Image (cartoon, rainbow over the protein chains, first blue to last red):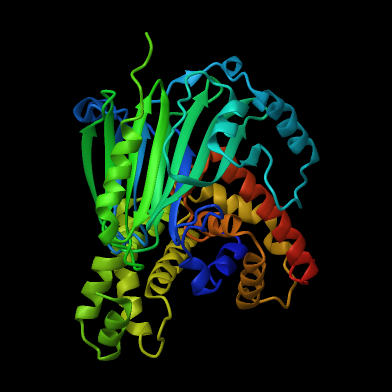
Length: 273
Length: 183
């Protein structure tokens, strides 16, 4: 086999680049905690896990920094999401395919941005929901201060909408929250999977509870980060849409954080038949 | 055990250093070797050789990152083995190696450019890239991970990974030309 010299040269790059962690996401206010929505084909048999948990999500794997050579802690979750027809999105989001097509046309190999991703900020979650215009999306109404909402649309090669996520940041006392709704369209050929990563050495525990609307809420809690804060991520699937609540808080605020968790989960109304 | 404590064991010529390194970074080193060699037994032998090489290298070396140092030695040994094993056909690294070869064929490298210098230039290039592009590039061409592995690791679609790699290669090609590495 011909091994190019460049392969040897790449092996001589600085150690710090080799040991680099996952790049921090700009919109994540919780320092050093990285959550990335993934649309990847995971050929794993998760149906048994779904059935066992009774939830619309299943824990695929978790890992801890320092174990088995891992240099970050985290876990992967698979979610049973309904692929919606693109036509079901009836709001102004229908302008996005044309915008993505323009991105694709205008991008060059020198661009420092990627096409196929449309991101828009809204003052409130309600405005973002209206923009999407999907009947099945449930608004969350609670007296927690919103600090902003980001809509992200991932498009395909022809601009078609593949996935949509709406993330709202909130704060209540010492508890910082992020509520997210994620959906996929018929243009998404991959099963939905979500990865949570942190560069710190933390462990995760899994639990479930049944919310007022009868939905199973799947909760994954982390041990304390270096900041002293602990976190949880709660997952609930309603009408084929994944709703996530992420919270980071000092242990002293745990009662408030758990109260917020249940307030959030109990809002999901049974699906209309 | 923390890296600093393991390195202290090496410096004290305490053989527990090898066991601690194997326990902590053995799986990662095996992953790199297996990516390159495509054979579990060869990868295992390569990691064993790397452990001995580490023992010989520290001291005098005192690596800042034991992980990068151990995996780097494994990578070098696996490349060396691959280079001399023409029968090796199942390497997962065939594609990334050909991508590197297309990026800068050996015959296009300036005669006076050494590998150390090229590595330094590539380090400079990577520091100018977005964190996403940098991490994806390193996972592909340093660890020789597959596109699908990188996609799962970073929560990207495979198309996004391919796009990041394509652009990074194009930018690196131009950068190497400007730096006088390619002719």
